[in-house]
Image (cartoon, rainbow, N blue to C red):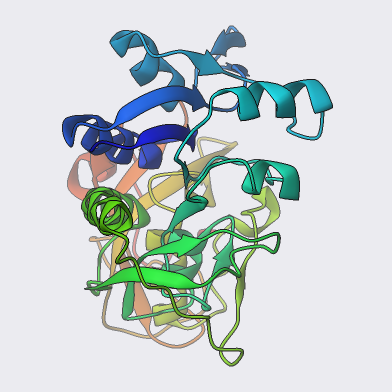
Length: 310
């Protein structure tokens, strides 16, 4: 029999899972997501991706800013869900909420727990130079991503793979994994194992202060920083152009060849020296412009060899 589900998620990463659960025939009683947020130049309120998807399907949506309110807790309990499925929801679930669904709460997390618990596991894995990651379904407890793991899938991280590419791959894999987890839950055969205490790391939220490229780091560290922040929020450098300082995002790079002073442009292909080694910048975005390859970028911006960027 299909399960009665409360789905709790907010960003693009959550949408494939909700879609697959519906496709598998489960009854989504309600969708919980973050409230609309001001976005864009006009700062108009924008629905979360999960909210927009649920609206298109006519699913009931709740956008409470907190689950600590007794009124909201009673509303959640009244749904009489078999299970809650949580995918990047963005709010902590208090104990009273965790205990409401008959079969508990399952969370989909984009890392190989206990490595990279927390808010930004995909970006942090790439920025740290990890060569492997994955997705895991776990039973939720009161701690931050501390619950026992039920199912997992591993994925190799490509040498030039960006956070955006890894995000999309893990979202698809995770959606399938959650469907499999619920099938096992229905059969009463979902077995979960406590996480090991060794190897715990935390994927803290990305801060604007860490997005600027530090050319004094090694080429590999700079490359990992660039791809770990691509496409959003984007790693950037400053370029002096026609007497003005312009901020330029770097969306793709590769480890290049050559040596020089950190930030020194080594050739006409945007190879930039780092603290050791060099990176070649292959895709960039000027403020207010569309992303472009380095060849197109250089057509509109003369950057001579041995000039300096910061």
